[in-house]
Length: 519
Ligand code: SIN
Image 1 (cartoon, rainbow, N blue to C red):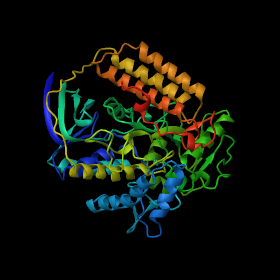
Image 2: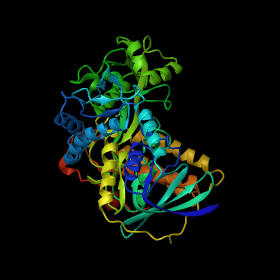
Image 3: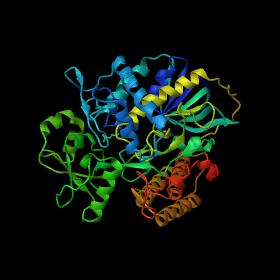
Image 4: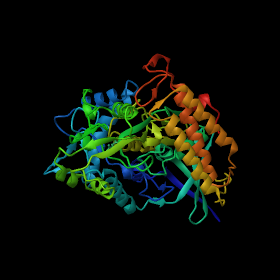
């Protein structure tokens, strides 16, 4: 076991789009250390298919994109944040193009896709539905070329050093070579992604367990809106857990949704299959309730399937491996947990409630998604708020940390990995059952009770890696459930069967630390 202390100007935790962009931008101003608990390319951004929504077409307008975002957000967005997102987002996309990022084109023109809730074609893709992969690969190449960015992979950040409301670094354990690292940083930027990986059916990598959220919460930062978990309507269905995303872009190409009687069930809605996600997911659930199978179908057979296969090659190949040919077969789909709107409360400069600690991307809640995220706005958010975080840090004073913080020495205890797997399995069942697309008070109380039972009964060790991951996952599940209980209304992706209306006046903004003790 080794102990080491590393000084850095900017510590970036997480290697999704927000983390990579923050690191690249910060490297213009100082030394950057980028830490990731897995490999550089393991992130939900890497898995993202949908692309980036941006106003790059002359026929489109900022106001249209702003209004579409506000409408999808169900009256709960921070309008100022949305305006920044849309206006600066288009500029950030142009920056990427200038840097050499290749988005799909028809000849010279950018090829723009349509997705749910958008009133115009404005989704940029790269390699069809492999946008996340193309973007992340492109940015990793830039990162590798920067001499002042140090990348540390396979390092689990287990503690933020925050005293008197100021963050001065973090502790991490690089488990492959058993090294404990204390980072002393002027600024720390959390970009650790969401917590959809806690659900049974999810489009996210298994690493999306809300660890960054827990770190911030544990350091005393405010969290917000954790009850808003967005389900993607069309994740491939094989059985209760096997799934992968079937991009909304396919509905943008004209795909139909059919129930088990092969009827189109979205025709009664104004935007039909391209209604916002909360509407489509709920309607799929309604259909499933009235039929024998627990999935519906996406039908592409009436479309130019050879063209679709060419544009969305990777997704069609995956379907092929499952024995599905979209030219002949219907694609079985059902909703899956996809994106966490809730997160660490941040302002327009990605500042958290702790000085020198910033958060951007899915781990943050800057108010841009309201109660229901508009499709393909999440990568845009990463681009905009990662830059804002760095720009703010550059102009603000930092507080130097001391290196006297004791190391927390982590270890692997035998048998604790199966325990973590058990915790994840139990949590994924009970979150999916009681804290899924629809909720009610009884189910939420049941979930809380079961989480509490697990928290009390498990033999968790404070120095064991998997015990800590189990404890974090349980805490995040508890916070999601408590938040869902507190919001006594139905809005966007939070649907309470016992409070069916929107009732804004009675809804406070929940700051978790005002309600619960810090662990
Ligand atoms: C998709 O391709 O359907 C996902 C896009 C997104 O989540 O914004």
